Image (cartoon, rainbow, N blue to C red):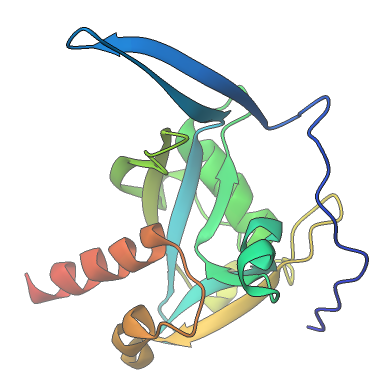
Length: 189
């Protein structure tokens, strides 16, 4: 997938759809304090293991916030989505798996790993992490997202996952690294 970014600029946020910014003011042990925060949607993320290919199915996409820091902006991540619908978290995960990666999975095959808070220094939104196994018989499309998303589906062989975790040249999320560690811990039990 080609990644040609042009005319990138930062603008003031008006009429936000996914986040809002605030200045929190409070007293802690009698000391007046303030802190800038971002209020954002909670999310789900799914570690997808392809049993036929002995590989993880990941997504690669452009992230403007990463671009500001490295002028490339591409990140390899778990399949994920924000919680913005009146559906269960597992149903949102199921929908994201189909939209982003192209696999139709039964709801009952989606296993919850854990949930945790992300970006606690400024946002504190909650992410719920899931695991699911897929095979080629579940493939119904090429994935890639909806509504103009440009998501590239990546296959990472299991044997390369440990090295991937520690490769600092690859932009990846803490949830992805945690899920790989969970998977390897699961294998050792």
